[in-house]
Image (cartoon, rainbow, N blue to C red; front, side):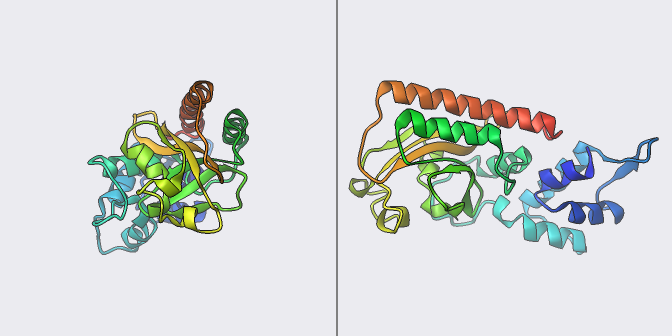
Amino acid sequence: MTTRDAATLLGVSVSTAQKWIESGDIASWKTPGGHRRIRRSAVLGLLDERTAGGTQATDIHKLVTDVSTELHPLDEPGYPVSDEEKARLRAVARTGLLDTPAEPAFDRITWLAGLIVGTPVSLLTLLTGQRQWFKSRQGTEMHETPRDWAFCDHARSDNGVLVVEDARQDIRFANNPLVTGDQHIRFYAGYPVRSPDGHTVGVLCVLDRKPRSLDAVQDRGMRALAAIANDAIRLRMVEHGTS
């Protein structure tokens, strides 16, 4: 892996990864051409330490703990979680997608989702321990929300599709700030998006500010787009050496 690939996988800046490599905290070597390379196993080992919450008395591990807080399960989360939350958060990190710029491959998916269902808002989200971050968004200026606001969490926990025709009438969401606040969300349909190892890392969803339903053709189209999103994540991981 390159230094940039390692930084992406760890969720840190290239300069931070370079500092860790130079200090020997991440084992590396130089190719005959003088290019620095890092073994993927070394980076994944450090990532496991991040998400396991281990602490050691070195600056590197303090920095790792600081940047990995949201990739560690909360002791008392205010949202539904499965027994695989720890492994799921590792899968989120390994996608290398978190906090990356918008990319056409994913923006096409959310644009098509809104077109198929006819909603003003469509999102491709990633769920960390503290927030739902929008890898791609159409129809909203928001780029993330707190994790406990996430309709998407219920779709992920149900391991399937979640359709809410009128959030005001659903006890799970009636007091959600996305419903009671300026966004005025009423309709939601979310489809799990998975990493290559099968963990649900986020959700492809469409939202509307008025109650509505989803017909069979729209449901089929959303399922197809979620599968395309899975493929896009897998392809990106291969291209960036994080698969």
